[in-house]
Amino acid sequence: MKKIFALLTMLTLALSVSAFRIEHGNNVAINQPVNENLYIAGGTITINAPVHGDLIVAGGTIVINDTVTNDILLAGGNVTFNGFVGDDIRCAGGDLHIVKNVTGDVVVAGGKVMIDQGVEIGNLLLSGGEATLNGKVKGEVKSAVGNFTFNGSAQKLVCRAGKIDFNGTVMGKTIIAAPEIVIGSDAIFHDDVRYWNKQGSLDFKQSLKNGTAIFDPSLKIERGGWHVLGFSLLGVLWFIGMAFLMIILLQYFFSPTMKNAGDTFITDSLKSLGVGFLFLTAFPVLIILSFVTIIGLPVGVILLFFYIMALLFATTITSVVVTNWIHNRKNYKWNFWQLVGVALGIFTVLKLISFIPFIGWLFMLIMACIAFGAILLNIQWRREHQQPEVIE
Image (tube, rainbow, N blue to C red; front, side):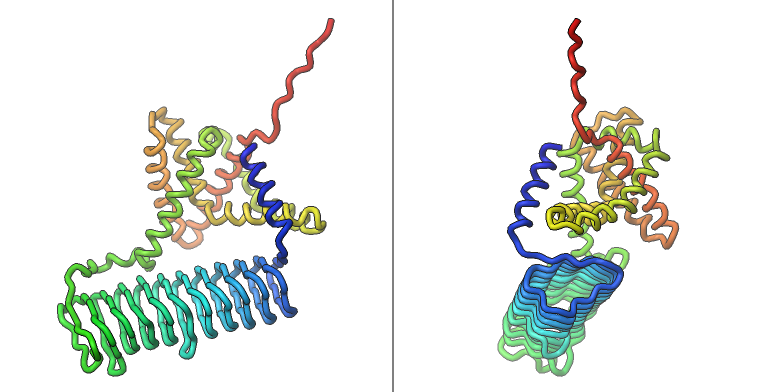
């Protein structure tokens, strides 16, 4: 707890010396200019005025209709970037649509990604189910997607996909690999092309201007190997890697708490369920109340951050608690890395269960509530005071 308190203190000091603004709610609209960093969490979010700072936003439907001077860090369901961005975009979501220029780089993971014609961006790192690039990338494109349609231009291109429709221009070297590659009549390659497709040959028509095309078997993609449950392999590996790292941190720094929570997980499951449900529902009220005063605002920001992190890593946290319950109940003698490995396996199973409509979501909600409750019941919130000495 001392480490957590010290971390909270440092974050509070950092936030107190920087200008920021926080908005939240089911429907959030920004209609006046914002001259500091902007943090938003909500259902439907619309930004109709310039943000002269960073934009950190999480929501269901997000529409950005005006300029963001600095970076954008975003997570959402349906997202439209309809305003100029003065620095980088890093985002994850369902449907992502970029309509205006981005001065910096774009790092994006989504189910469907669209970059419009006339849009200019720096570099592009792309992962998703379906992506269409109609604009101009002034630097390099790296992508691993299901279906990739390239109608724009780039300096360099590295793309692995299930299918590639190529009808754009690449000034530098190109690497493309997919079971199916279609080269359109408007495709132009100004340098060498290394490629792999299922047929083992490809008609480049008149697209090769200064370089040559080389079939490279080392680029081979095993059929279905780049997609898991509709997600690109790059996205899946990144997701599992983040979960693996979080499991290591939880088990290393909070091993006693997780061990005790494992005992409580089943032996006092009903109480844990109640406490966990109270945490998920009542904690946001505490956050809102902390925003009421200027003194409590930095603390509110920190609480909001940790609450969002708890929700994002709910499956990871649950998997660690369940692993410790199994370890304790069976009296196994697992070492640290065995615990981590089992937790990662349980995380994978829980994540697969969560894909089941309704039943999976309900199951995961109950499991997460029990896990959160078990952890909260085993945190030592204050020291036990020594009994006063009795003087006779």
